[in-house]
Image: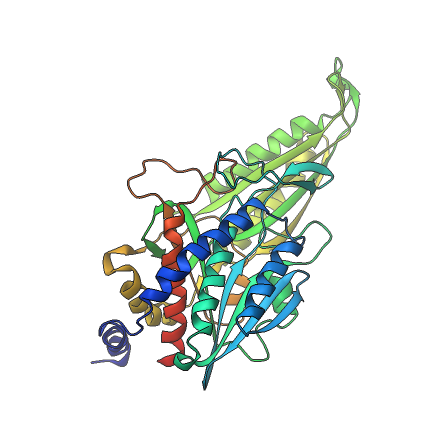
Length: 424
């Protein structure tokens, strides 16, 4: 039998020969703490690159566990280093800590009422994507593992990352800045794990995909130049709003008529249009801001090249001019296939075989991808929807909510994946 067929079978045997770690008492004891931490973070959210109080709470906890703690990493990030009693490899575990400019509409007793300034506007602030749960889960993992150094063959880095949602304009931040500042070095990380709670996945379920799991995210800005005129006399000017509408319509034909969607999904969405000051004036300019999502780099190249060709040509056809600027926000969240094979037995052991399910690729993005560009990584989805529920609210919305009963599985998964990786 060939080696590539034997290896998965051998790993499955090694990982499924009954429970390796008798942590049930620890899991039971840590669960209420994890829930309390999550509620505190949820009630006191902070925007990207502004997670000062969040970072302080994390650092205090890690220091209380006896970890080596680094603060101010990538502005507000925190890193805890836990060395086992035996030498070995280095594993990193990552949680994101920032919230979103969303006004919460839930009626939770720990509902956020925080407001802040975002892009010059006063906004509500909410953990509308579950980063509060990720932070609390990783704090729980750190506590359990810190009490079991004798079981750790190697080193574990706990990376609490700011600005996953993207730093404010003009600032650096997030995973890219953490990598730039050397978070995966000294000691050098061999592999990294991360999870994302999901409001549409039932509690107790873990979903994953080998290779491309989440899309590369690009941000585009289109500037349209026309000629101002009175709203009653459009023939005396060039309407940038009309041109913008034609550009939006044209961009959608790239997706619907030019891209092979049987290969991978792709999306172009315009999220903001700014133009004009008065109802009876056709303005001089318009600005559009949007996003491109792709799961294949050849498709990404095709889409961006066509956008750069199409935008100025459409504007010219209607007498105006237009420019387009495209910048990358994240790369493809790419799960290393060998690492997935290696760690699947662990996930099946902690969640149950039937509760570990293959996930289709999604067009959401994750800057965890920047860590995966440097070292092998495995990122998966953790169930946060109440079992039997027929509806859930999407992430990034005012009604987003998570069933806290799902968090302890995240603690178990990251704890035992770390130990299995280091001890195999």
